Amino acid sequence: MTGVSETDCQAALSVDPTIETARSVTSIDDRHLYRIVTKPFPPEQPLVFPTCRELDVTILEARRTADGLYLEARFPSRAVLREFETVGQEITRTVDVNRIYAEGHSPAVRSDPLTEKQRDALSLAVSEGYFDVPRRTNLTELAETVGISRQAFTRRLNRGLRNLLEVTLVTTES
Image 1: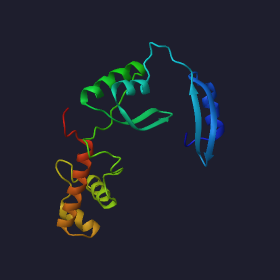
Image 2: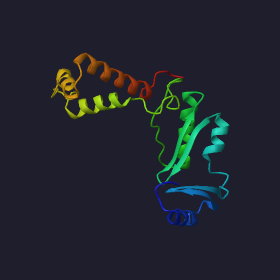
Image 3: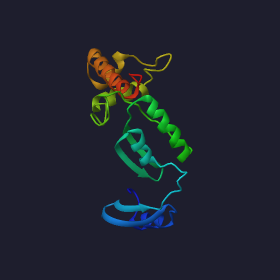
Image 4: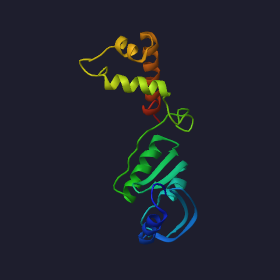
């Protein structure tokens, strides 16, 4: 757990009806690592990780927060993703798929798709109304604001947009 005191963390764990035991492994600043054993679930209630094994889903990252379980996973096909979502909705009411990456465009390859300069260019373009209809500014004015040529700003903006689109758009259908 992160962002809470160890006392608050232990208090939350002690009242969680799904936890059988929770043992503190280590704490550094406001980060706490626990070894948690959950109580057995009724057989009629599906579980996330056994479901992953059954569907041949590879978990790349699993993180539990106060907001729920965050998974980054590799699915063998879109059909398996849809089946996993269906099972997930039996476990909890809300299943959000935030992003789908095509093979080779995983955030594991690049955790932040934007360089700092691309992020700044996109932020400036948005804040100054470049993407508004009608536009409130143009590329020449934006480039002058950051002190580079129109052509350099355009390239930076286009590369940033391409990087964002590559990691957010679905590019293959299985």
